[in-house]
Amino acid sequence: MSEVILINVSGRDKSGLTSEMTAIMAQYNVRILDIGQAVIHDHLTWGTLIEVPGSDVSGVKKELLFRMHELDLQVSFQSISPEEYALWVEGKGKARYIVSLLSRSITAEQIAKVSEITALHGLNIDNISRLSGRPSLSLDSQASQACVEFSVRGTAPDRDKLRADFLCIASELNVDIAFQEDSLYRRNRRLVVFDMDSTLIEAEVIDELAKEAGVGEQVAAITEQAMRGEIDFTESFAQRVGLLKGLSEEVLSKVAERIKMTEGAERLISTLKSLGYKTAILSGGFTYFANRLQNNLGIDYVYANELEIKDGQVTGRVTGRVVDGQRKAELLDELAEKEKIGRQQVIAVGDGANDLPMLSRAGLGVAFRAKPLVKESARHAISNLGLDAVLYLIGFRDREAE
Image (cartoon, rainbow, N blue to C red; front, side):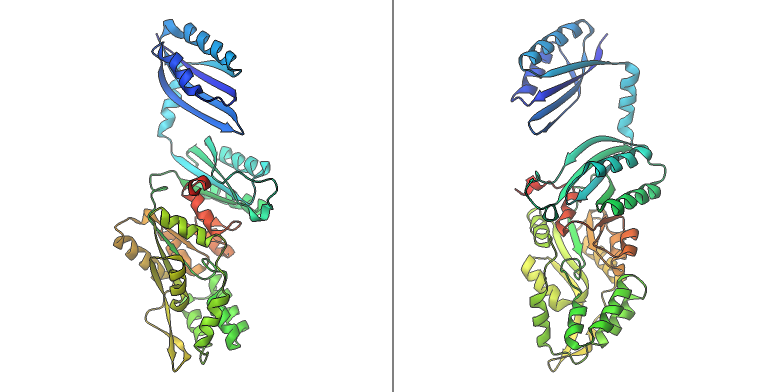
C-alpha cells in the first residue's frame, strides 16, 4: 500500500537542491504528484507531493531529513489521506482566473483587501507572483510601477458583485484590479487596437486645434459631454469640426509638435512589436496626427477621420465615413479577419464612451484613464499606471524585456 506525503523545505536557497532531493527519492521509486518552489530574497520555499511505496516511507523520510539537516534547511512531512488527495484531484476541473493588482507600489493593505474579496466570493488563491521588476527603496514611488498577479480557482456565484467589490477597493486604495479568465487566449493575443486622443497621446487634438481657432472653451465643453456619453459622438464631432472652419493648415503642424506621448506608450508599442503583435490606431481624431504616430511608433494600421482642407484652410468638414464607436467595432472585426485571428485574440484600449463598442468586442478590453462611465462599463481599467501596464494583463514580466 503506497502513501502520499507532502514535503515542505524552507531556508536559505541552495544550488542543486532539487537535484539532491529527487535523487534521494529516486532510490525509493517515488512518484512525483506535484512540485513547486519560490525564492524571495534568497529564501527558499520548496514543496512536493509524492507517492511512496508503503515499505519505503520511513527510509525516504530518514534520508531526506538527514540531508536537509546537513544543508541547514528546515523540512517537514505531512501524510495526505486518500480522501484529501481525491478532493485535491477533483479541484483540477474548477474554473481558473487571474487577478492582477496594479499600483505605483504594493502595500500590505492592498494585498489584504484583494485576498479578502477573493475568499468572500468562494475563490481560492493557488499562486501569487510579482510581474514587475524589483522595486528600489530610493526611487520615488510616483515614478515606479508594480504588479502582483494572483492565480485563483473556484466559481464565484455572482461575477458582477465580485467585479463591483474590486472596483470599490480600487477606488478606495488608488489601485487597479483586473479580473480575467485564465484561458489559453491570455498569452496568445495577436492584435492590439488603440484609441489615439487621451490614450496614445496626452491630449484631445480637436481641443488643441480649437484653442488655436479661438473656440477652445466651446469645443472642450462638447468634447467632455461626448466622452462622458451624454451626447452622440457623431453629432458632437460634426459640431466641433464645424467650429474649426477657417483654421490655417499650418496650425496642424504646430499643434502636432507640442503634443506629448502618453506615459508608457512607446515602451508598450516597442515591446508588442518585439513579441510579434500587430498594432492599430482606431481613432475618432484626425489622420494627420495618427499618421505621424504611425511613423514614429511603427504602428501597422491607422483608421481615423480625414480633415478636409481647401486653399490652405480647414473647411469645417471631414471626408469619408466618420470613425465613431460603431465604426471602431467594425474595424476591429475587419482587422481580426485580415490577420486571421479571432476576437478573443484582440486587445482594445481606449478612454471615451465611443470606445466602449470596441472594448466590449475585444477579447481583452481596457479602459485607460477613462471617464467614470467608461471605467464602470468596461471589463478592465487602468487608471493609476502608464499605458505599458497593459503588458501585465497578458502576463508579461518586466524581466522578460530585460
